[in-house]
Image 1 (cartoon, rainbow, N blue to C red):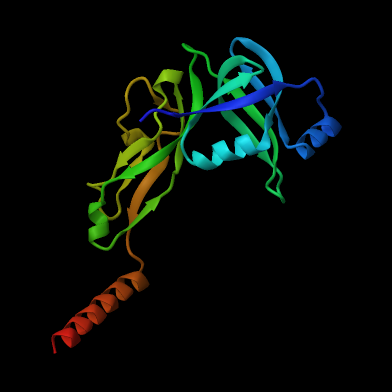
Image 2: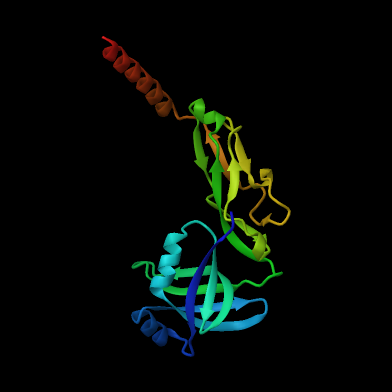
Length: 209
């Protein structure tokens, strides 16, 4: 799948600094900065509700933003989303201008595919990495990285080095990073599994009577 695209209106802002930014937020705007390979940093403001809606609708996926800056269109991706540690309100957003022919780095979610062989034997599938840092050209950004776990047995794991990706996409995370593994069931879980099976068998017998 391709990256989701969302249009966002943005306005240039002259004022910077704490006071003006606080006033901006009170008025329902988030201060933002757009930077990129061919442009000087542009100070912007975007509507808080627009950003929240975009983030909410495309949770997890990479999101391509089509910015309309007072009539001028620029493509961008979220780089840094700064929230208040207590209220979780948006404080500031860094946007990276996306230019054809220039590689960018984005976080791409991991999508687990298939049912692991080890799970059928009572193992527990543990996903260690929810997303990976990927470098590629804007046109090649995958909207997820599929990881097939069908063959994964108890005690086995898949690392970044095991991924089969198109040449156009490079994962920047360490090759030894574990993405997913199947662990041994703990003793209690194994026993609970057996008890569960016994209970089921008993229920079945009662039904038959």
